[in-house]
Image (cartoon, helix red, strand yellow):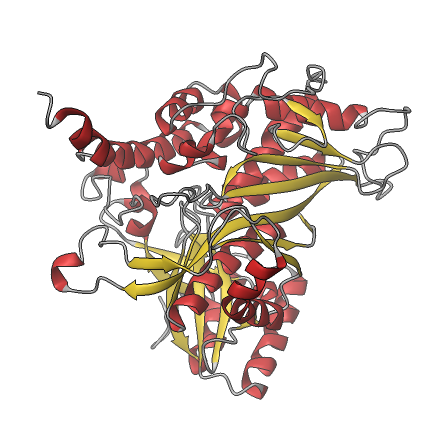
Length: 487
């Protein structure tokens, strides 16, 4: 039984051995830092199935209790699509996913990870912690994307490798004109805001355009750096009001943890100052360009610490392990798109001659290919860049898909096709044309069913099917233009 006033289950973390010795020591340090900083509250957050942060805000007096007992949250949060609609019958046995633990929307426990503690610069007196999800009996929630990412990293470690990844993320910045907050605009989802761009586009990397958006970018940069996120660069992208932020490479799941915080932080910071940041792939505005998430990745040999992708053969792009990893990514590209490109909108980006891929192939330092190989013999920074992802992807599932598919390539010693010099003209399997096509590939993937289990695969498909079903029942502007007059 929980102690009086407990927000979780009394002694839950120690009772189930959920923290390492290092986390226990760090929790004690966080309590001291929080009091010394004069924090008044702390946000406990967990990343849901879409990679969006959900959580509760506690008064700082409750933090010590949360470090002992966790914090209760409703399991129905795991059963919602992007409109916040619950897509499973939670009042039936097993809640539609053969999980008795979810019947009737009972609690799960958020367990803070002390290593993720941050002070939020834009929210006075507020700290933040990323959490893991557990059932009340101490078992990890199998639908947790962070747990899935951690499991993929551990599988790589068992094979002798550590994952290293760096983020390049594109998104759009706008001035808010109308937030659309009238009652009739508060649907599921609510009406999107009216916005205006901050600058014209089509002057890629132009200093003049950078100066135009700098006041907004500066707001984000200052707070991101104050939180200790390893920001490397900010660039003007090709389209109007489009920017790219890049971050230093991080081991394991840390790039995914960074991404869920950065994406949420950018939106919060902008909103407070009358701006709107969107990571939607292709906004429905004339002359606007799609945003992608380019994921740089390599493997480190756990025995030597050396880059396992650096080749020793002259003129080789990658080592044998690196090529096998690439072959795995290419073989499973269509099924992986459910993770790398999980929205209906994201497939509007896969166009030829567009700096985005449209087929599963690789190349030497070519931005038209799905996989761009960078480096070579003697280059300790040799890596690959997967350009298939969209900015709205769930960070933990995106990274997990790369580790799972790449490790499959290594385990089976797969050999990739020859690298392409002309990625939009070379014959190669096409990427899915729609989310529905990606779902079909994912449904039939023996790899993902074998690694993640039928339960998770079918669960994720059901959530995406709910999203697709709502989309297919909407009458679009295209249909109105196409049919309303002629028929």
